[in-house]
Length: 574
Image 1 (tube, rainbow, N blue to C red):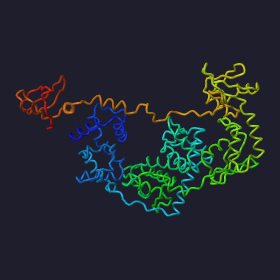
Image 2 (tube, rainbow, N blue to C red):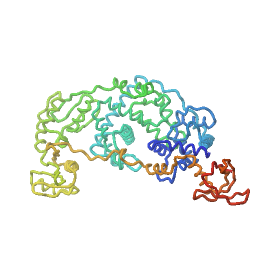
Image 3 (cartoon, rainbow, N blue to C red):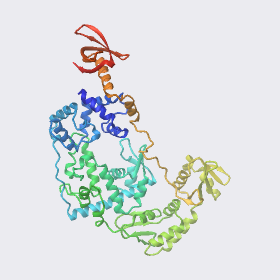
Image 4 (cartoon, rainbow, N blue to C red):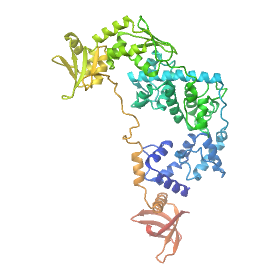
């Protein structure tokens, strides 16, 4: 046990800070733990309770390999995550072996090796169904990101989407139920499409770029993120995804695993990576490519996806009919100026004064909208739409928001005196603190925030950029949660461990053994180097340590001895 602690301490000391932080995270170590050096850390990680918690988090394949090592058999060690730090080199510490054997006695089935047979290929009908589900889910995820751009998603302490946001998204028809929302949020996080900080999720820069990708590339990007985030117990030795029937037993010692496994199963089926029929236990060709090449691609999926179009029909009743799925770039711009009424492979949209005004607020111009619709429409621009666009454009811009850099203020310009007065007394705008000054209103709030507040209050607002031209306001974004400049939660602990670690490991370990013996007033056998170069062994009851000397009672001679630490060669327990 003593040699195991020492070996593990030296192994931990040799890790870089990032790798050491990964070990501490995997082992669920508290950042406030009172470890002074790496020997304390090794002792803590080898405690029975700590080892048991580590075993709980291991997949079935790793448990089977640990059981083989505990029995003295050969094992591949491939499935045992190095971040668990349950091995010293390729050896199993005595404390870990004891806990493995004890746990196996209580739960023998948990240590059986998982089945190795991959699921069979899906049938053509199953692949078609999986592709349709993938297409639908990709569109739903885009809808979720667009809704998040308009209003960040708040979350509860457990990390789930708040009840108010669930209700808002369900009423908007973006998802069919709360379960689907949780699955899409999991996919968005796995693909890096949203940033989460202070219980608020916003669309990341990667999410912005993702929205402009074609559907197949959208699917592939998110699928790659899902596979990377997938718990290792759901992957087999070939790198493929295990059959759905094996998911529930992937972490047999973890009582919290079954609902997690159920959600990952839903995510995989929702994204078309597994067939919907659990009994079939089959995988589509694009998922099998992961097993064959180690990477997920949309090559095999493309042929199953509906063809994306670049033309629509504009109707005199201000509606838009898209006879097929629009190219993402075109749909994004259309949705910026028209409200979507239904989504399917053939979708419908409708122009309103509010939707056009929102587009103008977001940086569009009447000329730009007209040119876009001319190129998009198979039926030209109907006269009612021309009238609506002209009248909305004339009304828009009656309220302009710009920045006064010299005074670090935001300026709200309003040509109409009555409207300016209405703005100054509008209770919905009271948080902005608008102060009249001549023909304008001033506020210390940011330009983007002022523009959004006026737009939400249904004022025809235009934001003026630094170049003097209309521009698009953006909802404020919080910094990404994994900012490289942000301190890690284990930084202080790691610094303390390194500060307490001596470059002379033999001397440091000797000091630790003596401190433990003194605290326990234990009997120890001390090997002392004599002036003539010979070694003499003494058995002492350790009683004190300080000033570079060890004090202890030599019971054989019944005398108190004081030994210089520099003369002590070796210490062993009696």
